[in-house]
Length: 256
Image 1 (cartoon, rainbow, N blue to C red):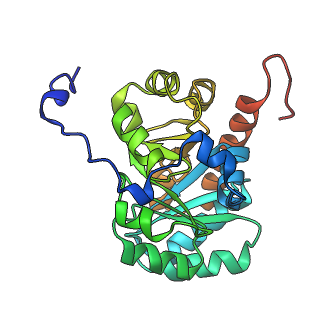
Image 2 (tube, rainbow, N blue to C red; image 1 turned 120 degrees about the vertical axis):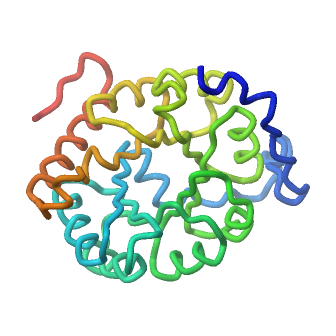
C-alpha cells in the first residue's frame, strides 16, 4: 500500500491544551447543560449528502448551486477559493433560507470568521486547523475538521469536534476504510470525502459514514463547463434518491 511507510515518518499531533480537552464521562454527567446540536449537523446526518461546489466565477457558482438545491440537495458546501464565495453565500442564504450552506477548504481562522459573518452554517477543512476549532467553540457554526488516521480522529474529537471529515477517503480504501475506523470510534460521527461516486453512497453509509461529500458526482466537470444546469439538477436528484435509499432499513422500499 502507498501509505505503508507513513507511520515511520508521521508524528501524531500533540494533545490539545487542557482547556480544550473533552471532559470525562463523569464530568459531562455533572454538567448543568449541554449545548444544542447545530442545525447543520442535524441536517447533515438526516440528508446523508453534502454537495461540494468549486466554480471559476461567482455567477457560475450561484447558478450551479441553485440547480443542485432544486434537485433536492439540502446541504451545500462552496469551496473558499471560489471567486466571490462570500457574496454567493449571502445570496443563497437569502434565496434558500431552509437550506444549510457552508464553506469548504477553510484553512485559517480569519477566513473562518469571514465565512461565518457571511452566513455560513458550517465550515470544512482538509485537515484539523486548531485555530478554527478554538475560535468557534460554543459557536452556532459547525466546524468539520479533516482527519486521516485513527490518531487524528481521536485528537480532533477530544479537541471538541462534533463530527470529522475522513479525507482523502478514496485513496485510503473507500468505504472499507470508513468501516474500519468506525469500529474503535462508533461514537464519533464521520463524513466521507474525496472521489466518491453516487453508486457508492450506499456502501459508505452502510460502512458507518454519517454522510458523504459529493463533488464531481453532482457538479460534473463538463456540465459545469457548458453551464448545463439541467444536468446538475438531475445528478443532484439522483444523489438524494440514492442517499434516501441508503438510509432506509434493508427490505424497505422507496419511491422513485
